[in-house]
Structures are given as structure tokens and as C-alpha cells.
Image (cartoon, rainbow, N blue to C red; front, side, top):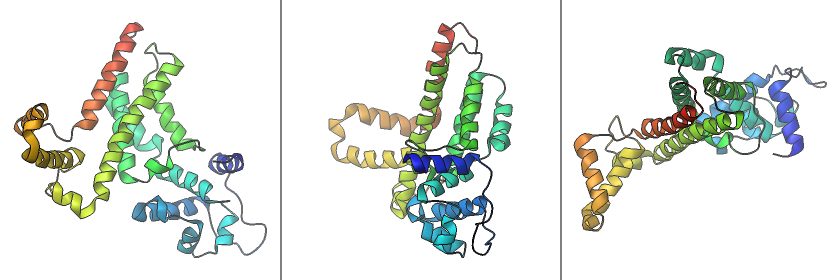
Length: 260
């Protein structure tokens, strides 16, 4: 994002909402309404379906009228991401309260709520990467994650890295789910259309076909797949990876002499 776009996006996200255009008839546009129209398009068609022209059409205004409120698509996407992220003061805070006071439980609850946000709006995975302006809600999510680690003995850089590590795991799981979902009917057919189908189920189906053809060449893989079929354990990648990450953070916390 260019410096000019960065500055204008920050002003839109953090400043007071702009008033009506200085010239022309008042259209009743608001930043909230503009962002909401963009979110609706992205939810239905993905981020690629969003354009200033398309949003203007959804709002029954001209593109030039929209430009009086939002300078361009980069700023529009920033507003959309802010609108789509759940207000942390609502559901997230309640989830953290239910999780209790332990850092591990609270960070785990934070991760699951973040995955729920990505599942609700898969295009957020594209909209929330790279150098960009971030709004109050997204910063609020970061604040809650860092607050969960307060008193653990980690320094600021370690706490930030821990949160980035957890968020990266969540994003990876969400990306896998999005890829499976994008497969449409083909993905559902591979997974058998089961209610619990997901990335692990689809991968297992594909690997099962490989094993049927060349299983003798991959004995370790064959044993692992046989164990999954016998004992279960598919679609637990989020929890398995999250628990291992939290285990590692716990070792660092212990080394700092702080309690869980």
C-alpha cells in the first residue's frame, strides 16, 4: 500500500466519519454502509468480485459519488476487513471470560474465535496480509492476545512472536479449509459428502488412492493411514497444532519462572 493510500486508510479507520460531500446532493452514504456492501459482495464472490464500480452499483450511486467517501479500492478493502472482523468487545471477550484466567486457555480460546472469523469471511485471509492499515477491531484482537500472556514472564518481543505463531497456525488451517471449499462439488465428492468432511478427510481420500496403487512403496504412510482409520483422529489439525504450539510457549514460560 502506497504511503498516500496508507494515510487515507488510517484516517478512514481511526478518524471521525466524513460528513456529506461538499458538493452535490446528499446521498445518505456512510462508511459503515459502504463497507457493508463490499463485505456482502466479497462473501458471495470473493475479494476478486469487489470493485469501486460494483460497490457503487450495490448502493445505487455513481462511482464518482463513492469516491467522495472512499478514495480507492485499497481503502475500501481496509474498511471491509475492519467491518468483517468481529467486535472483540462482544463475542471474543465473552469467549475469553469463559476460558478462565490461565494464559493457555485464553490464548487457545482466542485462536478458535479467530478461526471462526476466517470461516465466516474466507476472503479475510487475503485482505489481512502484507503492509497495510489496520483498524480498531483488528488491533483490539491483538491487544486481547497479548493481554492473555501478561504475567507469564515473556518480554514484549516474545509475546508478539507467540501471538504471530498462533495466528499463523490458525491462518494455515483456514487456508486449507478455504481450498477444500473452493473445490466445490468435486471436493465434496472426494470427501464423500460427510458432515464432518474437511481438509484431513479429503487428503486421506487422495492418499488412500495413492496407497491403493503404490502402497508397498510407502510403508510408514500406510501404517499412519491405517491407524487413522482404526483409531480416528482426522480433522484435528487445529487442536493438535495449537496444543503443540502452546506446549512450546509453556516451556518458555516455565524457563522464565512464571506460572501457567
